[in-house]
Amino acid sequence: MTTTSPAATRPGGLRVGVQRFGTFLSGMIMPNIAAFIAWGFITMLFIPAGFFGADSPFGWHWAGVAEIIGGGGDSAVIGWQGAMTAVAEGADGNILAYVGLVGPMVTYLLPLLIANTAGRMVYGERGGVVATLATVGVIVGTNIPMFLGAMIMGPIAAWITKQMDRLWDGKIRPGFEMLVNNFSAGILGMILAIVGFFAFGPVMLGISAALGAAVDWLVSLNLLPLVSIIVEPAKVLFLNNAINHGVFTPLGIEQAAETGKSILFLIEANPGPGLGLLLAFTFFGVGAAKASAPGAAIIQFFGGIHEIYFPYALSKPTTILALIAGGAAGVTTNMVLGGGLAFPAAPGSIIAVTAAAVGPGVANLLVVYLSVIIAATVTFLITGVILRASRKRDLAAEGDAFGAAIAQTEANKGKSSAAMDALRTSTGASASETAAAPTTTTIAAAPIETIVFACDAGMGSSAMGASVLRNKLKKAGIEDITVTNQAIANLDGSADVVITQQQLTERATAKSPNSVHVSVDNFMNSPKYEEVVEMVRAQRKDTE
Image (cartoon, rainbow, N blue to C red; front, side, top):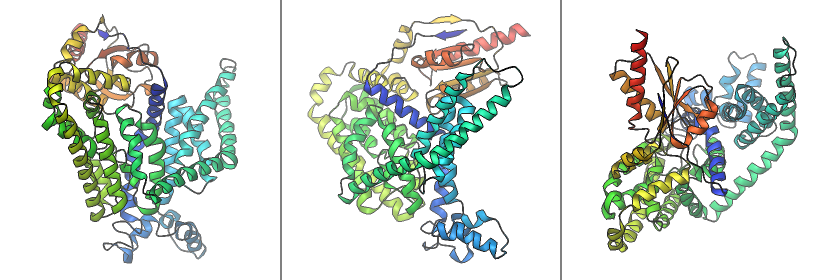
């Protein structure tokens, strides 16, 4: 049995194109966030300005721990040259012990992880290998961390590999496939690495320098808060990923590698504006928006799911001005007082922000907290004024306004999500929408052993849905079925059942045509889960 709903037609236009581009960029970064966090912790603890560094009052300089792990001060001298000198003098030990972990990780590991992920997104494992080879040339051809280079060269190299393989697809004599595939990928990787070293690397170095100079110019003129004029409306329209992961994260990593923190990590991730907006709706809102705002504030602030406050802003578009003011106030606070994060806060939860802010010191943590509080306060006050001014009109026309705003948020994103489903459930819309959705039922013929929840990024809402179904199967006494979550782009056709939200079913079917596909409206609490459990139970009875 599967329930398959017709996929919604996705709107076209520039906005959707930017959304898809942003989703692609975040798809390179998000799977590697754990590596960024690991590097961030090492950096904030062991560089000279870190918690245990030589310049810190808690420093262990006398024991050499910071120098061994973090690489000491000037990595060009203490790192490679110091290591070579030590080896030449007959010193025992590992060269990496002198170089440290911070430099190699930010210079090689992180960009290569991004390149490999990008290559896999375009052309699977083969694309990932060639993308990694090509990106090595870009890295070695420059003298700064090449995150932008990896995000551009990786997909290009994988795409070229894909086109190359099409040239002789079906023309290789049997028995020579492995020889041709390995040598062709190796030779192409070598060529692209050389091109990256001599041509692509210097170009990316110039682009990075230009972007960095633009940010420095904004900071020098105290204009960085003006970036919120772009970022806050972009968030509500799901256009922020292209800015955040395409510009802020790469430049922020470079700054953090030098100083131990970066303000750029907090421009988009600051949970203060969203919290202020939701608190204002809690006190001054009307109807369903007022009733659901407290729960949404908890999810947004502690869970880091910012999209849950977007319908509130869309239901009263003038509140976007409050978000801009709050975001700018938070950026100003960090700019004036020197606040920043040691690594990207993903998701944008106060918990993640705290973890990334505590390393550079208690004073930095307090500044970051202050920026969150000020951003929330400014947004709350302005939103409160806006809501109070239109309260009588909102009470008279409340009706379906909030439900329409939820639908508009999903249209902007191009798909549904668990956060929007939770809001819809609180307004009583979920049941009606589910009932209205046309469905067809198909019985799964093959034994079900693996069930995959798939979404755009393979994280967040799909992970919550997999957990819900896993618990339902366990309560039904079925514990030998694997239930996982992954990105639609990573579906390989091996899953027996694929569960997606309605807007994504068509894409999932194309990636895994032989699987049984289940379309749901609500990842958190769908009646289709009970049908899946019953289907599995019925199959077990038939085989007994």
